Length: 212
Length: 224
Image 1: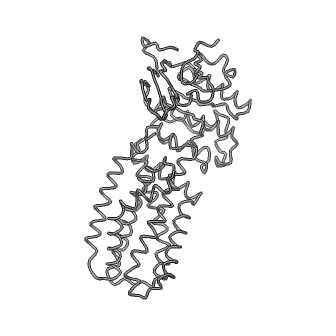
Image 2 (image 1 turned 180 degrees about the horizontal axis):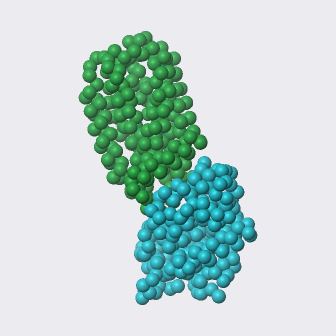
């Protein structure tokens, strides 16, 4: 995962990226390439810079130093954050229809809801969803634009075992045509699915390598 | 997605959310009603005095009640960081600004429709000038309130004291519009002169600040 600038297929290229908030350096000189068709796990303790890195790749934050190159257009970036990015007073289907409307080639919202195990006909507003249901709907929302680059920040938190298995199956299927960068504290869930792991400590890459 | 489709999409979503929550409508309605009633009891004006002060009271009531509502309409975009989802999509920031402004215009206008008859009763009003120009003055005045209000509410969105920041930013820049809408309304009520000059000023103000808002909204939306 170290910077391989000779590989033309990198969809995300980080070149000596740093991010400073006031006097706190969240990321320091990070370089890495991420490729289509692979699933990467970002590991690290709280405050290591994982979420900051995802936000920078998603275009929500600019690096203080270095360069973040994303080869695909923002139309093809899907981002599932800590926050749900959902309106409480809309139903799940209404939320997905709204976000689908922001893109030129959206996926059908009914199919997306079904793919994460939610009933598209459920009239309940999102404020009445359980945390796990929100999490699954949030994943569906991140997929609404058929992303080539999918950024997932702790997608399995508060999700039960059955739903986690369903989400993993979906990620497995998506992986063939998508670059997935996933932050998690439960890397064992991704055994056999993830291709590489990058461990951040205090904003630096402390370890990296292929997963079995 | 075309610009108009995005405006329609965002406006439809805002109207649906407002219909369900009534956050902005309740805030504008109760605040405006309270101001109108309190001023009515405080001054107890006769018919002639009413015509002289009614324009000022009406627009001050809607200026302050709009401020309460404008904070509400952006606050719902901050819950669960939904605004970030819009930013990631790279959809037009100007379309979001225009739809929010249109939505706020509709919310304030709806409340005006209910408050104006009460206002006429409380202040025993009868226009001596051409009352047919009042809807135009109300529409222009309301747009002037919401177009800047929507922009500055977004600008103060990420500040620590956004409820205080919005009036501090909005009120000084609204002074020309407030003068124009109050003068135009008062001239129609008293019949002293033609309100045309003030209507032209309102049109100019609205054009300038609508265009400026559309052009400058992208950095406001994408500020970290």
